[in-house]
Length: 131
Image 1: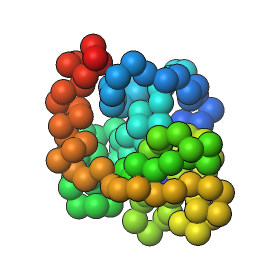
Image 2: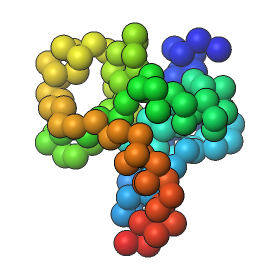
Image 3: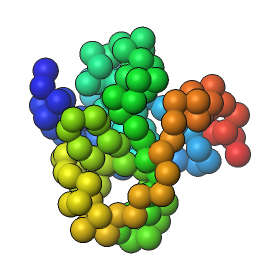
Image 4: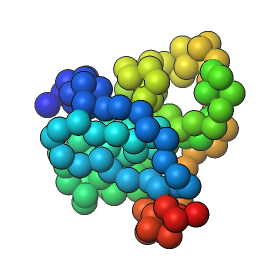
């Protein structure tokens, strides 16, 4: 399935829900899903990589995708997803845009979450969820 179709499918099922603490996860299943900005981005990677954990992690290791911490247009902490050769997306816009378009909408990119940090957030998810 093409990346646009994958994202459209996720968009039709996704509802934003803030999490308690930092509980980064992939939202599974084919029905309705709820999560925050990191969950949306991670799920989009997983879906684009054919629901394969091996391909998911390889895509992060090889910088095919990068999650970026940014400030949203409202000034709140937020995560956006960059995909090499495609552009930027998040759970607010729900479509791919250029870096310039992202900035012109008021996003302020801060720093990327590199693979080791993403892996650590996954491994510590049960602990961080309780904080």
